[in-house]
Amino acid sequence: MNIGLFGGTFDPIHRGHVALAHAALQRYKLGRIYFVPANIPPHKQKQPIAPFLHRYAMIALATAPEKAFVPSLLEAPEESGAATKKERPPKPNYTIETVRRLKQTFGKSDQLFLLIGIDAFADVAQWHQPEALFRECEFIVASRPGYSLADVANALPESLRPRPEATRPFQKQAATGDLVLRGATIHLLDQVCQPVSATAIRAAAAAGKPLARFLDASVAQYIKKVGLYK
Ligand code: ATP
Image (cartoon, rainbow, N blue to C red; front, side, top):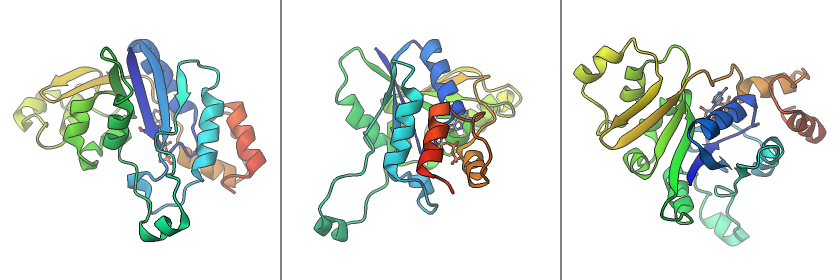
């Protein structure tokens, strides 16, 4: 079975995330997509984020209508006693570790695809053990107008990045189709990215504006009920 893993902060999950997952599900015949909220996203450690439990609950609500979407606790906070907490601060969630943990549950014919938006993909070379991550799974990247195929190739970690002469002809070619390189396979999904971000939603919620156009109604209700992002 083709299986997707979609990681993120999901603070909160919104229509952009769900549209990406639906498009990947259909296009790559994924049998299941795990939505994996990070307890501690490595690249957002300095900003305050909503508690894991609320982000997970909103994922459960937004994904309920699609049987193949599975809310995941793979990056849930570790349970630890007070003594251990004092000794070692909680660790950020590295995707490579999550991927390896998930793959331990796979059968022989299962194949893993990592779902990601192109904005996040642009920083992939700075992730923990990026080369290993490309070895472990193929990527499905939701592209956006304004990004070229050369941008995608140039975002790769240095050891996987094609030489500049090889990518130059693709500087004006839109980021669509498949990029199969030695050590990395990237599938680009175009016309998927919606103009919505969690940042804009948090700002709208703080200003008391309606959220219905950004989010599933059940998630908008949850935000209101719990009083998130005030
Ligand atoms: P924030 O605004 O707080 O940075 P975000 O909306 O970008 O949040 P994340 O949880 O950080 O959401 O993103 C999880 C994943 O979803 C990332 O791979 C990101 O690129 C992707 N993503 C975010 N917004 C969209 C969108 N509108 N369309 C497609 N993919 C998206």
